[in-house]
Length: 238
Image (cartoon, rainbow, N blue to C red; front, side):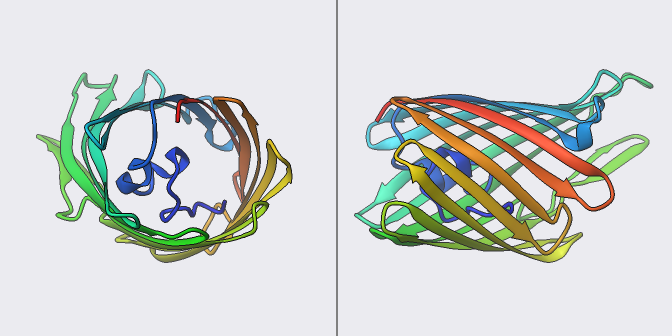
């Protein structure tokens, strides 16, 4: 939905806010994305969420790139509700680059924090990633990972219409505005669309719910580089 969703209490928003899964039951999921339809820019991700003692413990593993240049990501975290409306989350990340040209494997450890306020039909979310601006370095290599801050909100209109908005601050892009819509045209089928003020400029997708299974098909469009399709599949137990 235009890259927004930091306020949503759903597993789909875990990449944006670690507090998003505080109410999740057991969930296992995988996702795949191909940026600009280039075989060198393929991303895959696996997620597992396990409720334990009133909290949600979660883990992520992701890869991006190919054999010549690949980034691996491992994340573990904890999310928990505080009362009826507030929830918080923390996630620890480890990134590693594999570079075939010299065999080096530089790594970086950092963390993200999130806070959500959720009511019956609206909510707000705030999250930060890499707040201390850690850099990945080796003897002849430096890669900067930006500080990212997100402030999001959403409003549901009945059971079939949802509006999502978000502001994202990054060290590189500065401020990006996002807005997205989700419309349920059937009880188990929805259409999503969104726009953002930086490239890729817009996105669309379809969501399907089958009992405990959720699947999503989506693509975004960059004005110069073209389309980036993605697909995700989740098994959820409430």
